[in-house]
Image (cartoon, rainbow, N blue to C red; front, side, top):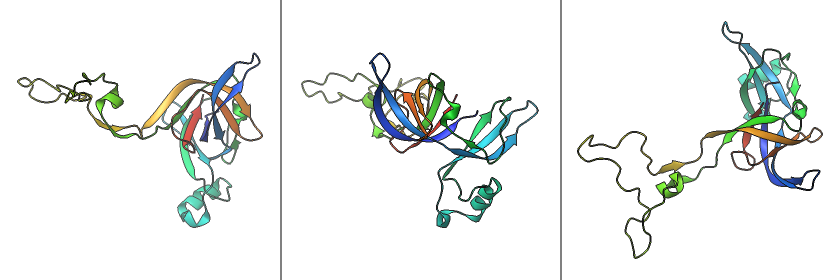
Length: 205
């Protein structure tokens, strides 16, 4: 199966059979209806479009309503995302994908929008050590020299400098599924996943 769209609920801990605590992130994943299945180029690649949540009718355009109606949905999904479809997957438009496609012990990758930290200096943004902080040093957290003065007389591209930190698309791979709750559509993943609470994430094997 291609994967799921979910919402980050928060973090907690659970205990395994040996009594060892495991930090987990709780994700409300699915059910995700299939709105579209598309074929790619000559190499046989296929894509599937999944939806998650539902929009209010007053906030939905006619184009969105028509697109959802083709899949047999009464309301347009709040969010749409496209996943690559494996060759052996047999799915059809209108089918609902749930957390049942995952099992405890599976390895997944989770993609989300990392928390935005605003404009930050090099010490916080890139982990610079800084210079002496005692005796009133005037440049304790400054980046220092940013390039030679004679040649090339400019700052090289890619230089680590202050700037906006976070708020970017981030993927964490090889995360372990600890527990699957099919009744409540919950997925328990070991460790932390990108983004803040209530942020949307993509889960795929």
